[in-house]
Amino acid sequence: GAVVSQHPSRVICKSGTSVKIECRSLDFQATTMFWYRQFPKQSLMLMATSNEGSKATYEQGVEKDKFLINHASLTLSTLTVTSAHPEDSSFYICSARGDPYEQYFGPGTRLTVT
Amino acid sequence: GENVEQHPSTLSVQEGDSAVIKCTYSDSASNYFPWYKQELGKRPQLIIDIRSNVGEKKDQRIAVTLNKTAKHFSLHITETQPEDSAVYFCAARAAGNKLTFGGGTRVLVKP
Image 1 (cartoon, chains in turn orange, green):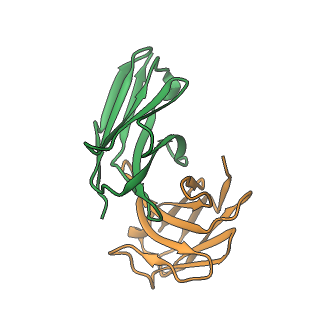
Image 2 (cartoon, rainbow over the protein chains, first blue to last red):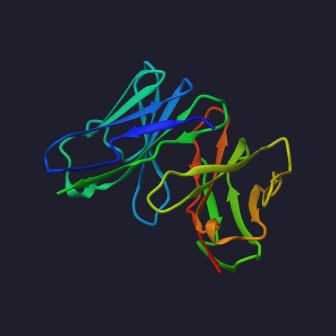
């Protein structure tokens, strides 16, 4: 299958700071990328959908000014968690879709806000 | 929007036995149904998928069945092995839409 990378894999930041997470499709062009958040022992919760060159579509309850998404190219999307707080600590996973059906996940970023 | 229910939430089986996980979906327009396996702290891995134009698909010890009329689909793992222990997620999607995930099933294969 296709390869999706994500960086960093782990990050610890202080409350009030911002953190940027990168998601790259390495061997295919991703027309659509997705950002998920996963709390321990829970399912994946979609935060937003982004298409290259256009604004992201956020799910209900997700603050677009807090979770900034940029999808500048067909291989790169970034998620910036602004003014992070401890409750933002979670496992953030990106996903990319090039094929009309299949969707591949990045390895995830574990964010800890202290 | 789409709603996907997954059962059971936990499943414990003896090595060599079969495991079955069932999912139901609500949107009759959904036409793509993938299954993902997620090990602790790792990414979900696509293990098998089925599209609405087929009723069954098999890949070695893994099979998926789809009943469009009843709007349910199932994952079957035969001859389970300890390395099959993980969390499994079903998902459903209508064309061009986002994937909606089930709540997950934690499978434990006891040696």
